[in-house]
Image 1: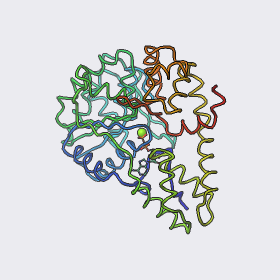
Image 2 (image 1 turned 60 degrees about the horizontal axis):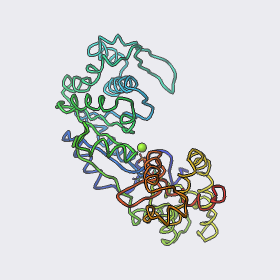
Image 3 (image 1 turned 45 degrees about the horizontal axis):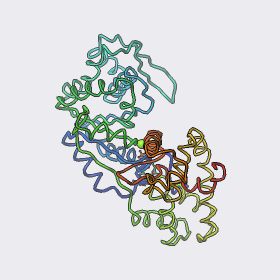
Image 4 (image 1 turned 135 degrees about the horizontal axis):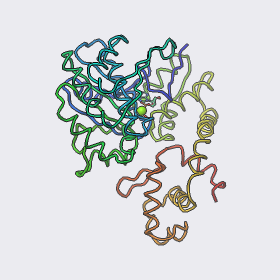
Length: 377
Ligand SMILES: Nc1ncnc2c1ncn2[C@@H]1O[C@H](COP(=O)(O)OP(=O)(O)O)[C@@H](O)[C@H]1O
Ligand SMILES: [Mg+2]
C-alpha cells in the first residue's frame, strides 16, 4: 500500500492538490515562451508545481523542459558546468548525441565526456575545464539547440537564489540577463525560497533581473482543498477524521503544505478508527520532536541579542519591537541595534519581515521554542 501522505520530496500527481490557476498560468507561460519567476516560502509547493507543469509537456516534442537544481552551486564555474551538463543531457536521449552536441557548440571547452555503467547514474557528462571564459558559449547553448531542432526550450532553475549569493553575483546576473533576454526559442522559469534575496533580485529597479518575467507569488493551499484531500485518504482506509481536526492541523502549521502532510501522516498512522484529542496531541508532539534537532542547530548559531529578539516575538511583541519598553524588557540594546538584529535574523532565514509584520519563517519554530524556552533563558 502506498503512503497516503507525502512530505520531504515534491508531491507527485497522486499527492498533488489544488493549484489549478497557477498550473494553467505556468503552462501558458511555458507554451508561449514567457519567462516566469516563482517565489514562496520553503516547502509550500514550488518544485511540485513546476514538476507537474513540466510533466504536461512529456509527450510534446515541440517543447522541451529542462530542469536544473542550483542548490549546490557555489561558484560561477559550478553554475556554468551544471547548466551546460543539464542542457545537453536533457535535450537528447542518447549519449552519442550528447557528445555531438558538446563538440558542435562547446568545442572550445574540450569536454571530457565519461560514460559509466553505474545503474544509479548510468551516464555522466563532465567538463574538465570549465571557466568563465566559456560562459558565452554555455549561455547560448539552449537557444542554439532549440533553433537547430526547431523546438522551444524552457529552462527551469530551482533554488535560483543561490546565484544571488555568489560573490560578484550582480556581474553574473547582468551577463545572464543580457544573453537570455534576446533568446527567441528559449524561455526561463526561475524559482526559489529565500524570499528577501529573490525579491531583491527581481523587484529592485537597479538589479539586472528587474522585470524579467511574470512573477508568481505562491500562496498557501486553502483549507478547503486540504479538507477534501485529507478526508478522502482517511475514508479510503476506513478511518475517520473530523473537519475540525483538519482545521486544527492547518492552523497549527500555519498552512505550510509540507507540515500539513507530515502532521496528517503522523495522525493517520496512529489512528485505528477515529482521530481523537489524545492522538492529535501526541502527533503534534512527535512533529515538534522530529524537527527539534534542526531548531537546536539553528538557534545554536544565534547571538543572545538575536535570541532575545525571538523571545520578544514569541511574546507577541513583534509590532512593538521598537518601543523603549520592549527594548528594555527584552534587553535588545537600542533601536538601532533592533534593526541590525532584525536584518541578521532575516538573512539567517529565521524570520520573515513584510512591512511592519514580523513572523517566524518556520511555523513550527514558535511551538518548539515555546516548549523549550527554558533552554534559552
Ligand atoms: N500541490 C500540492 N499538493 C499536496 N501537497 C503539496 C503540494 N505542494 C506541496 N506539497 C507538500 O509540500 C511538500 C514540499 O513541496 P515542494 O514542492 O518541495 O516545496 P518547495 O519547492 O516550495 O520547497 C511536499 O513534499 C508535499 O508534502
Ligand atoms: Mg523546492
